[in-house]
Length: 24
Image 1 (cartoon, helix red, strand yellow):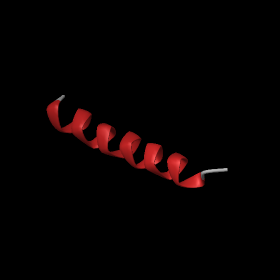
Image 2 (tube, helix red, strand yellow):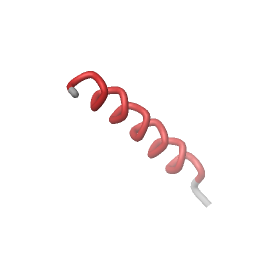
Image 3 (cartoon, one colour):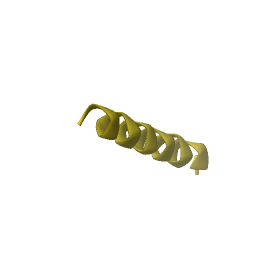
Image 4 (tube, helix red, strand yellow):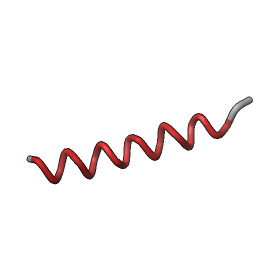
């Protein structure tokens, strides 16, 4: 089981959230 993949996806979701908030 590769847990780091889920942590990586979680980080990307947070980053996209911040970018979306910045440009909206």
